Image 1: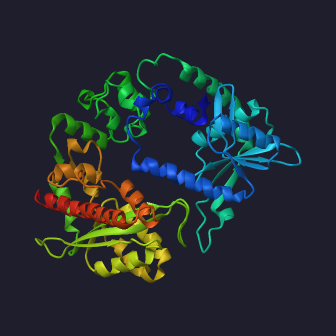
Image 2 (image 1 turned 30 degrees about the vertical axis):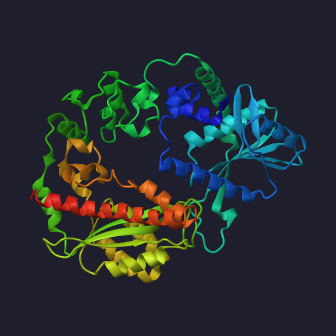
Image 3 (image 1 turned 90 degrees about the vertical axis):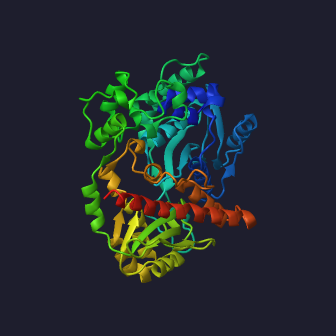
Length: 493
């Protein structure tokens, strides 16, 4: 049976989908990351809330033969609304999020729930067209196909208003127009995924940038090194460039022809990789640093993107700032002092967060962050929710300096950055004695997930205390790492 998930995966990378079905030990070799696990949990949460729009719905559990029999019985009884009814026909399988019967006409409407703020046509419409075709194969008259997704314009005030939280978009005509194309693809997918012999050659992700690679890329493309032309900055956007390199069997950056046309950033990345000599523009770095005013405040936030707004003033997926770390250098040559804030309660952190910032950050001095768009964006949102702190937050934003600019402006380029300006790549080069590797929490996605688990009561007692300690240790390293990178750059001037 080819499920709608298998079909969507096949559309993205056929060989990856074949391995999932036929070589699951390869496909599932690596455990889900905290980020991937959070996507699944968020989807389940959004679906559960969306069902409240249809209070009389009956839920079908599972995907087995018993669930199909239950679906058939509910259809026979003409139950008005069914959640997760399971259909299997002609080698295809799908569970429909919501199937609603029109009692007057006997026709059905499909509702596909998406835990996103907008329709992604290349993904969501094909998913829904698969279901539309399958239900028609099963003999059901389908009058409507709808996508039900979160409303980005909804701002919670008081009790959650479910009818305003979601948008229902009727995409019936688009699905009808797409259905024949999808039907042909479904048969192609079934034929491809059903073959017993493993498909030969590279997978289709060979022509995509690293961030778009499938989970089994290294297995299907053993000729591609771990750091390859796929890692050239924004090469995935330059499809013609990447295709030319791949068609020429050029995978290693060392083999990129000197005359090959690249942007300045891309050329610097390749050049430093080949020469193993960094590009350092000390005069430009000095010019940037001359604008900094003491005290220097090295600041970093941790946030949680809650799909279903948990507190007043929040929209779907708006970030909840729950923690910050701050290292302060009062005068040149002085060691940094550390300050921190972590909200451990289940209530809205906004007020306490803003108050702590006002306590720890003075009226004079540069505020140094890594990727200022993020922190400044959170401050603007916080100012709307905490009007008493608006002037302070706007003033804080006016004093922000982005340390990442040194690297994004190409004033310091090193081959071990691998084309990235992430602090996780920069730190090992400039301050190798500092590392995230031994921390219990090593990146923001895990920090976000752990805070959520702690504050919704998923962990408690000693385990919750350990989470709080791990969060503080991780966030503190983020700001100390910024200080250490700044200090290392100073030594070059």
